[in-house]
Image (cartoon, rainbow, N blue to C red; front, side):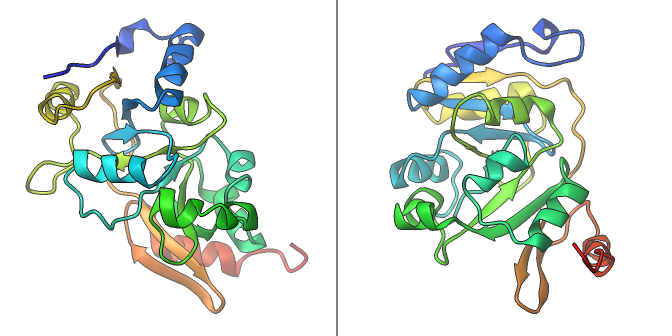
Length: 231
């Protein structure tokens, strides 16, 4: 079964723990050629691919044994990159500026351009022209999300009983067993920053909680309540 083409070890990074430029260029080449990269995210190891179309999403869901209709969330390097894909309201921008990088997934409408291109329905799998946006705390994942002109999928590896995978060796073995071709693996430094992201959606009347994680829902609501009147 295909093993990763390249393994980027944690001890081969810069003094600050960042991926070296040459390694990041190789990762970008893998992603833009349609390949996949095993990435240390905030909570566990995740599978990163550029969401070109419905075939990419189908591959992600098949590889990770997810229901085929499930949408994928996307990781971005920062708010500027998010704005290329998602239509951010003032409230959405305030939440992203306050709580990211961090364990927040914010469901936002896609921009008109991406809606017209069918990006939300085909590549993301959304039924309502929205996309789940993440700006991860993991600087490695942020670097990978920003190494091309596209965001990347941020889909967790889970065991058969639903537990997230935090062991690099276990994550590599899991992807190897799927027969995934053309992929690379990035080793984490062993320290994951959170257990679960909090997933919310802004509505016309307020804030809807889809899943509460490490970031308390009450903190998000309080941040919106405390927004300056002239924001």
